[in-house]
Length: 261
Image (cartoon, rainbow, N blue to C red):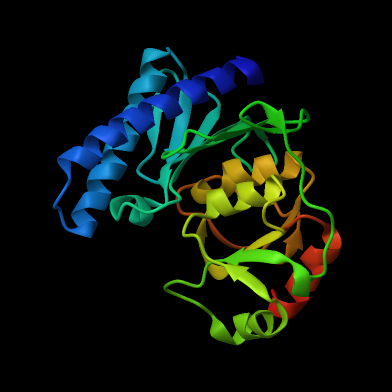
């Protein structure tokens, strides 16, 4: 199957994930947050597996919610069926579905990617070498700005590494935290944000592969564990430090500020 065919499969899967999650949100009303999150994640994973099976796809699914061999195996489908589950369980935005396909199980080998907003249906897509789109319209990263004037999102929950974040807080005037790395990276791709950082060392590959592919196709840049354009194996357990930006100058400035290894 070519990249266009895979993109149609991913669109189909995203639609079914949203439908199944919407039903789960009604059923889960009143549950404790942890139980509600499990219900939402299980519903989304089930919808994804069902769609791949119904479409007759042969692939290896690597998902935050569990790996599944579909058909006879083949290309790697990487998924976080719901990124921003905590937001979704509390009725907050953003929350998105993140899906991508890699020919060799690496970020560099990703052929097609999709990030779809569960609330609004807005959908970012990219095919390798063909640019990035938002609801079918081409997108590009923002014009260069210095870190002090840039709109930057970050994640400092659970393991904030405040000693490294402090220089960023002292320098940058416009900081945000949305609770969905895939959304934040997609907003860098579309020019709404200038950069996104997660230097906790706990960010999972499944959370960001689709959005990083979209960012790259929109002209953005990133560093994985301090390495420009660093590649990562696409496994459920792979984690990283990530700094992503609209341009190399801003990326380097942020790496210096946070002293990434």
